[in-house]
Amino acid sequence: MKKKIIFATGNEGKLEEIKMILEGSGLEVISMKEAGISVPIEENGTTFEENAVIKAKAVAERTDCIVLADDSGLEIDYLNKEPGVYSARYAGEDTPQSIKNQMLLDRLEGVEEEQRTARFVCAIAAALPDGRIFTIRRTIEGRIGFAPVGEHGFGYDPIFYVPELGCTTAELSPEQKNELSHRGKALRAMRAKLEEEVLR
Ligand code: IMP
Image (cartoon, rainbow, N blue to C red; front, side, top):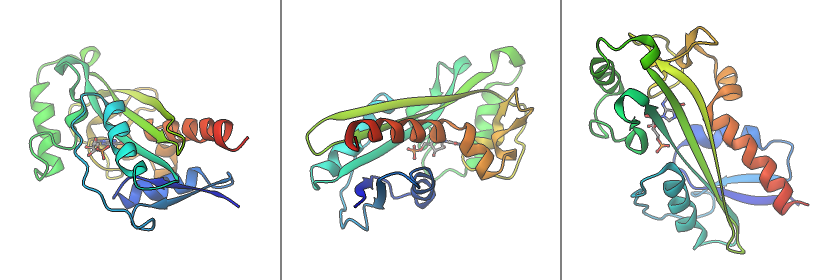
């Protein structure tokens, strides 16, 4: 029988992504809703790892299953790693993404290409029923472009240019992005970690 894992997110897209990545493993992901768990979570950590652990622990207190949670965001070096853990809340949670993207482009007005380095970061935490906690962080390096380009993806993808690919992450198909992205890499690394720790 497969071991059940609860993914502590309300985001359907993330749930589908992890389901795809765990296919063929001995692990089966279910949503909080499917597990009948609803818990208000305050993401008040100062690092991606802290926030992922806060979310995973909050759910783990209510179940005997393994719980996974993630936290992600964009770090821009020239802006002292802003928006960072505040990426979703940058300029206000309800501000349209196109305006957030434009605000960041405006703050980088006149900044040379070499100084526009940035990365997407994803931290994933796993809380095990025996109390153990694992965290994994993965990134994708890039640069902030000079204008939004591309229709795929979400969030800051249209302004995140990957020099090796010659395009933004908003120009990649979901499969291509999954291969390279901070979240895809972190989820695959967490799959390997859990296979080693709980399925052996
Ligand atoms: P959370 O991880 O759901 O708390 O949200 C992180 C925020 O970071 C999102 O709302 C996006 O603004 C941004 N973000 C994280 N990953 C990506 C990505 O792959 N592309 C674009 N924006 C991202």
